[in-house]
Length: 82
Image (cartoon, rainbow, N blue to C red; front, top):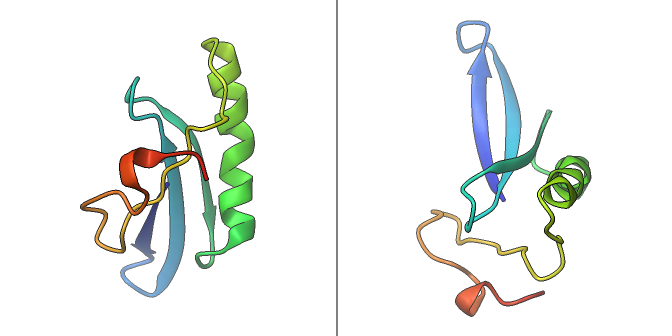
């Protein structure tokens, strides 16, 4: 999961984009946009991610990995299941 802050309307507005990508396939599995980072926003992105994985014959189980605030290294060693 990757959260990005997106500015629009010449910097007057701000939104948060969450992207869920699969490390193995490099596919973006799901995404959602909202006013701020939240568990609800992450949940909105998970639904299409589950569907996309099922379409390519994979399962979401054990595939979620969080990253540090900078996104540079996994926060869970080896991206183990939560």
